[in-house]
Length: 281
Ligand code: GUN
Image (tube, rainbow, N blue to C red; front, top):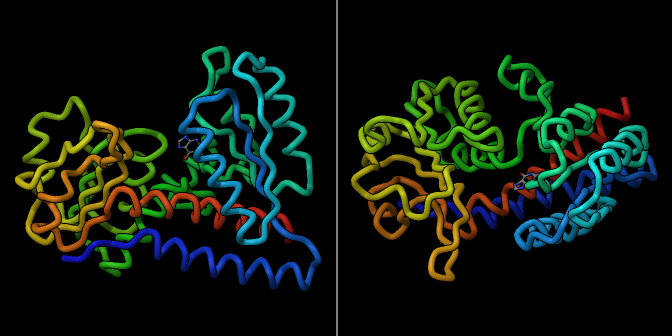
């Protein structure tokens, strides 16, 4: 059994990014820039955004966080995004979710120019991914796939089961696995016989936000198990997988924390760098 060290893998990826930015800085005297819009004072969002800011600075990118109170109007945010879309110093734009109720998430996501959409949530990028075309890929599923490929390079013909069908994680994860020639099943809250479906998985990705949902009798021997969940349970952070039980059955498993989480932010930096490079050609 192998515990996949997401913290270490993320560090390696950040090192690569840092080197590339240093090279760019030397040759062009410019660096990529990430701008994050943070609305309101929801604590998890504040923590994520702080982390993003810290990590982007560490790899040598410009990082800007624009904060608004939670009664800001939709119009004001849309105007700001328009300005950022046209700002050559801004390589990537990220609007931290969730948003307050007066702001329409769909409108906001649609307003970010696809070439600066480091989250990969704009329907243009969603469509590119599902068509198998070039585009920006959501950070968490990208990080998950990198971790899976550290364990197994060739995923062709493997049965992958993704638990959860969100636009952020489940759906793009399924698309990426399909691109790798997996046979992909998406299961969700209305699925009949969840356990039986999960037991078929060579690769099991849990992204539902239900603490310790996946038990040891849900997992096939030697499966690769990726846990996207970050849940609070009795003041402890736990994933969607009952780690202590499942680790002895799985071939490889990600812990929570220290698995997928660090990879998400490293992939965000990777996307920002990609946006920058594309803007220079
Ligand atoms: N909130 C939680 N996860 C994410 C994410 O990946 N991107 C954005 N923009 N907001 C989030």
